[in-house]
Length: 324
Image (cartoon, rainbow, N blue to C red; front, side, top):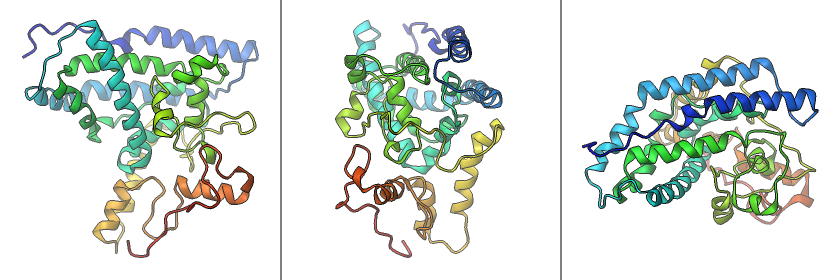
């Protein structure tokens, strides 16, 4: 079944020395050359441990998604092979796939439970890029790669090109780089665009989901520009308040299942705690991103209709119906 399969290098593992050198350079730039940025030793260590755990989890559980995609491979409509141009197309399609995965991860709590740890740091530096999930293999989101496999892109080739996507996303986790020339900012994901994505400011919530190309956010209406007058504040809406990597990795899973197991809920409400957006609650007692944006507009009516914010005349929150 794997006859003729190239021996693809592990792109992310090859890049590890470059990651280390870049993190050292960033620290030097901030500490000795007064570039913008912040570090906290315990926070950085937690990010490094999260990255290590992600690698271990991939080695132990990576067979789940790859095995499933290899099973799908037998039903492919075409076999596109491993030509360089196939790799370029695979990269572009997989970058689009990543956009939708990332958007779903912020809008479905089941997937947010594994993605939240990447947003859990209240600092934004290159080490934050390594704060990766330990549980991504269990969300079932590999299903988004199924169409590519059916079209004839080999699962190993998809994994190979995705490695370049991950390596690209490393360098955009920094405050030391400001805005880049307009053509770059127009097409590519940049530190400025990704700072917006990691911010908890109401206008920035649920925006800039891109991996490599920011054009997807511009196409699908989720792009928000970084504003000097509204500097990004990092973390999550309710910060976890720990540097313990085990708690960082599993706290949302635990909270989600506790919510779904509450006594007296209907089956629909239990499913809501699993699959509705983060912040959803059966009694309306919590606030999701839409409600937080709406509250901000009420306090700052002059901001109504700005990118990332609702207009004053639009419904600001979904109507809550008791018992749903």
